[in-house]
Length: 464
Image 1 (cartoon, rainbow, N blue to C red):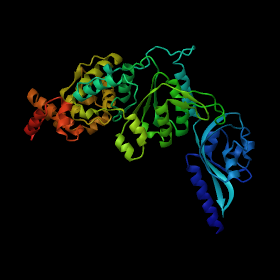
Image 2: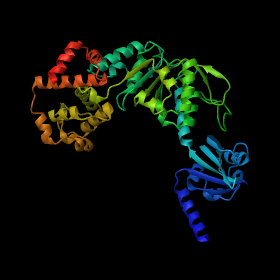
Image 3: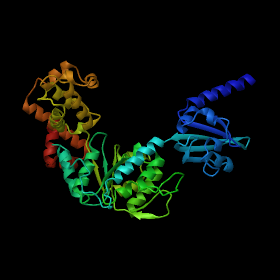
Image 4: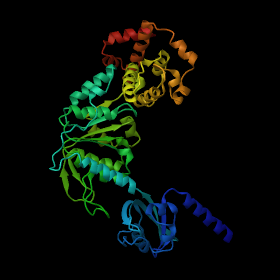
């Protein structure tokens, strides 16, 4: 029995040591009885400086009231996702997000365990971002009139009729202050599209602030968006959030569906009444911000999977734009290829004249899961390594070569330069893309193609 207990303790210690999160356990007297190396790294301490010592001796800046571990010992109640800011024994400031749980044995509390995540570096980067955004304003408080977006709708190059119509609609809706929801696969150009909306709006001279909701932890995201009041938690300072910094301009929230549901409710309130309350504050500030959100998944799917609040969706769904993946706008592939070659020729001091015909064929057949971004990076790679006048098969990145059809298949498909045959294939792909987007509705597909319904029916009948 003694041997079994010893082995169990060794196994438990090995498991705790392998966990990639800080684990800190204290007894009811507040003395540390377990402290793993990850926690020591988070706290900037050595294990020996904490293990066996009272918590307040190892971390003198903490008190009985501010320590989550000691508070759980006192109340016997768990604390979830609590931000804690303190100084270690060496005077270094530490920021963590803690989940602290009481430990019971036969109904009696015998200690508390804390699972801590270090976000000091992330918080530092976030605060630098906020400070950088503050730099968009002059010292007298007025907004700078310098251009704050890099792209306009003119930079969204396309010959696809659906995307052309989408751009035209977006230009009209840009004049409004209503929220906008944009969705499309990764790499389809959502931020470029959103910057185009901002540039066309009356807010063009105001700030444009973009924030990826998936890149910031939940606790930090709330303070970044809404700001913090002094004393809202230990170490908190009076700081504006992104809503206040975007006052008079546009706030772009990317990957909205990754934002915690509870935070989405707070976001909805700000959109509804324009009032922002900083974390820990009892006062609200009025802001004039247009919110544009983007997602890389279908909103309906996000609703079904409960990643998006329905009330927030319906509030944002005033104007909705769905950006086509590159595989559904094949006529743009060769256009973009030529534009990217020109761009990287200038950037890399090259004189590439174009691509070989077999590469054109491969580009048209490839699915481009990374969309326009993947095509751009592919051309960048090829231009850098190409030693001839045209980009060839041997210049393709290795991953694309491995996914491509055989050379014999490529050569066979590039033998025919028949204009009629190639136009027929392009027309077929456009018809299929329109039908797919219209979910089989002939009238809607005809509108997308900008042709009469009878003409579409005739062409479909001819294809069968």
